[in-house]
Image (cartoon, rainbow, N blue to C red; front, side, top):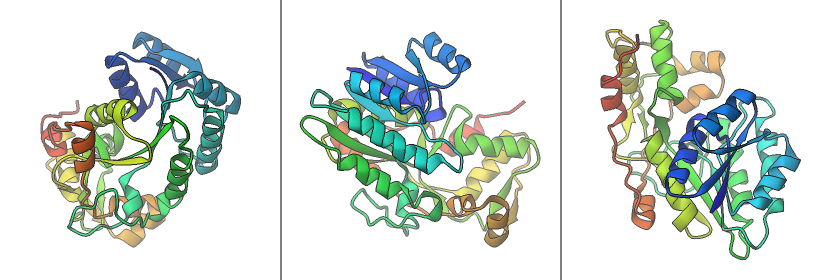
Amino acid sequence: MRVFVTGATGYIGFAVCNAVKKRGHDVVGLARSATAIDKLRTAGIHPVQGGLGDASVLREMAHDADAVIHCAFEQSSDGVALDAAALDAMLGAIDTDHEAFIYTSGVWVYGKTGTTPVDETARLDPIPIVAWRPGHEKKVLDARKHTLRTIVVRPGLVYGEGGGIVGMMVGQAKAGQLAIVASGENHWSTVRVDALAELYALAVERAPGDSIYNAVDGKPVKYGEIARAASRAAGGDGRVDSIPLEKARELMGPFADALALDQFVSGAKAMRELGWDPKRPSVLEELAGTKVA
């Protein structure tokens, strides 16, 4: 297949490009800068210059591809509107020859879950920072037509290769700025970035239409344990200060509630239906082997 990937040089998107290419597909990646274009070329991925605001580019690439994997999201005040417009552009360009369209959401749409792991049938109760996500998921799933399979992937907390929120925490610890929001006793459901990328590659080939998959692996890990491990990875002693939730909201807005969210999420459906094997070193094991110079 010819697979078009948005966010192709991003943390998740670049891993997805490599995983899809490894399975023998022709990958085209959206890239905004000359540096990003060079990164894709070096990896053997065909670059196309553009961003989420370039509707004509998105329409052309989506129309010419057999499948689309949408990983990009712009972290700005216009991000939600850009995402909606990008979906309209790409979904509107798809015809009967297309095979799959995969949209990247996230487990934060479940809100606080309780200690019984939730699966993809659970009621959504998104926290404010992702309150818009279910509507965009529906836009994608409702676009199923003819042979097009529409798929939503909901990653957990993504770690590995020094990126994501965990990588950010190690950087903050190195700078002496890492602090836990609230008690840190809440749990995060996690997935390593390479395992997540493999789920996308399997989904683009095998997932039936109207599918939703939680991308998480193993037992949820306490946020405070991850923070203390990040401190040690940065050369510290594992001691981390805490900030009351209300104060954290003043400092970082709705992201504070995401960090304090307590979630137990199941990834069993992807393992069962797609043959996905996400087993990797856990986030704590990975941090234990990380030392930042």
